[in-house]
Image 1 (cartoon, rainbow, N blue to C red):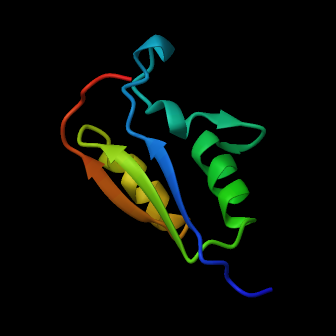
Image 2 (image 1 turned 120 degrees about the vertical axis):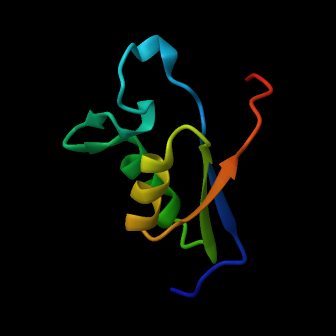
Length: 82
């Protein structure tokens, strides 16, 4: 199938403070893989031209996980709330 004229942007910059964990929220495993991997798989199923993950400045490990799943990582430098 041809790539659609679509870009997928996944927001993964939250602090995850309610999880009370040193592991970033999106990297917690559910069903054998990270929550980020689940969302990225769903986005990849849409065959976007570009897949990007917005990460927080405090979580470079999330950026590495995004790159491992073939996505661009963009750092959100300022937190303005949800």
